[in-house]
Length: 397
Image (tube, rainbow, N blue to C red):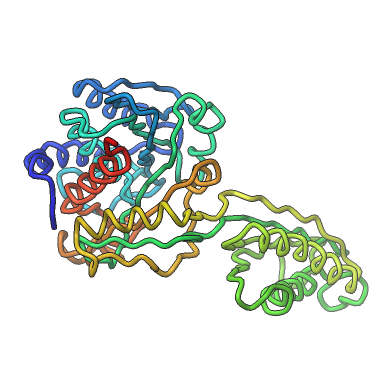
């Protein structure tokens, strides 16, 4: 790997910042202390800071030269509502809150890049360092955009990355087009007519009807959409009834829908309501249908994906970069930024867990589990990638 020597020399300092953030996790839109830590460091390096976007988000600005070109680099700051199982010195000091997805590491990698860029300024244009709140379900990217992110801080393109378990340290993966799925929730309330369970013919059974709806929904995946259009409907909840000998008046079922395109999502939402109402009518029941769109699909623009792959290949070697990585049905609110601007989101390898002792739940690499810890070996890799990205994107002409 061709890591920048000055970034390697500062690795211990950036690691200390990362572990401090890990020890003081804050949930979505509560990242006040984290934002203070970020702002304090940026300002100490002579970087202009603007706060309060999307509640607790902030943007650092580094300018050099006369070019009007600009680039946005994004890191997320929030933690998860999870009790940490780790016992190391930088474990969470807040019960029920934990950096279990590596946002502490994402923030630290961008800070490492910011320090170098501020000191050397080997570029011509403007770098916008976007530290975003509330990725974990709060839509912080959307809220920053609503607060004028790209109006106040114009970006020709935006880039971000996420640590990825199982990929070796020193590797990257991305792809042009869909990289991550949209995230959506539904709730279907089935209303019938209660009866004695021994005489169900006297009522209209919402339990039986709900069960038929669960099965019928999968027909949308297999018979309504094209087989080549990837999508998932998962019913994950089914609630109703209080006694074994009573048919209840109503039940409700809920779950998630994931797609890689808005067009397929439109189809699925429409057909879910149609199918549910038709099945309910067949068994003398009615439904209330609720559908909430959370995050759109994360879709990389082709030119920026190719650009990012080129930078990563120069850094770690082409054999360690997968430019056609398999997309995941997980979701990411960087997607809101990619709806506004061209750009690319990447995965950076987090290793197999050798950076941590064994015996902790699902392991130190797996995201969203109480034994997770960001791999500090990634810090200089991610920081160097961001720097090289800026220096080539804003290369003097």
